[in-house]
Image (cartoon, rainbow, N blue to C red):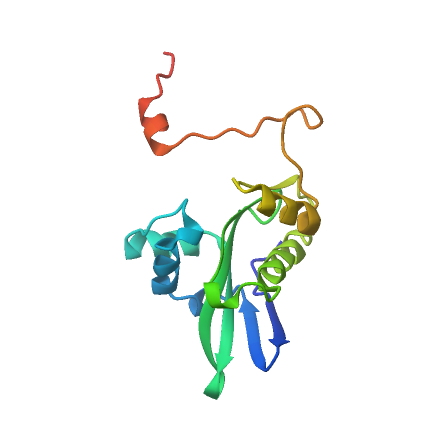
Length: 171
């Protein structure tokens, strides 16, 4: 799959909205600000250099409010860490408080799904969430289920940086 740019437009009430994977549109400062919010409890601000590298090495969707003069003000985002062929890890889905309950979070997820569905050799799309309410959303929008190993013979595993550093590999 080519690394192309996907774009969508939508109007909610009188507000025009634009979503795009164009990396140059999403400011690092917006991502850093999002990482400080309670809504993204799993993240924390990174250096500007690390944030740019993270964004440059991911498929990142930015959601923008269109204001006068076609200016695009970021109000939401999602990242898909992917090889654009077999695996897609959805992470960092975020929407500013003032834009919640308008269906925009679902729209972000649906746009992610549209992109991933173009991956002809996709094996799996995965994500991590601790919220049962959000799990239901991902079941509805993406057809996801818990990876418990019984049906898929897979176990979803993870390690923090601290656990990786403290691991004792055998010689």
